[in-house]
Length: 314
Ligand code: SAM
Ligand code: SF4
Image (cartoon, rainbow, N blue to C red):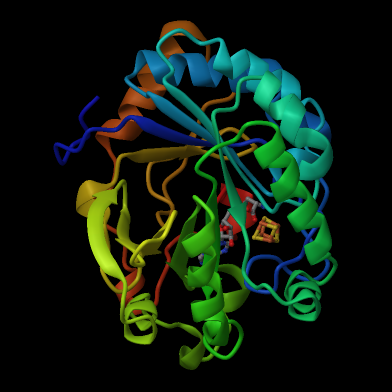
């Protein structure tokens, strides 16, 4: 379906929980988010019903996210239910990788087509410091399990943070030489805990191009500008929500774990979907798409949403 600005909207990011087993410093407060009654969070049936209605509105791709989607009880049932929707072309999932070692094969069997794995650093001590509780070795075990389960073309997402991981740009891009992976660098967006951080933490993704000068441009994919190192098996992606907004090409809508439709990550507008069924649910999704804002205001260091990233679904 087209939104009010003539953009095709065919991609839904569906959050299955706002809870997470990590506390990444830029994303979550140390104490985590207040645990809600499970009745406040969309049930497996509601998630699948929303997915079905979204597909009727033109959605072709659904990405499950959170919080950490793999901590959600019933995640495999959610995947099975969504994967069975006629007309859905791709079911993807974004994860911190911590629980992937045990879940990669079941996720594949449940119909997940693709995985994105967040990987902000290759240094174990740094990883534990940034996530406040994670172990990098668990993520590597998860990556191995994902490959063994048949997930191809893995994508890795690194949030670029000045003074934290900008000295690992070369090491991260190097992984694309020997692996058929896309190593993606995402600009840090000023929302949640990091909104108060000093400006030197917010680096433009072009820093990667200045550092790794032999990257050759290739065709973009989605909102990522893409590059390849000479002779590399994989690719490198840059995602620049702050320095070069891609709002004009945005095809996404989001649904939060508590059932609010957000047609823009950074907007305050939320449309409650809970309690709606059938045509009423479809009509609400269409209304949300029609009212999608033209653009966000990140260039002014301002996200208008009061929610943190884990509460929306990154
Ligand atoms: N827990 C899962 C994970 O970490 O992959 C999925 C949810 S997380 C909110 C999704 C993505 O958003 C992660 O890659 C994370 O690094 C990114 N993210 C969180 N806060 C961000 C921010 N302020 N700016 C840019 N990316 C952010
Ligand atoms: Fe959890 Fe992902 Fe946020 Fe890290 S970025 S705290 S793993 S939701």
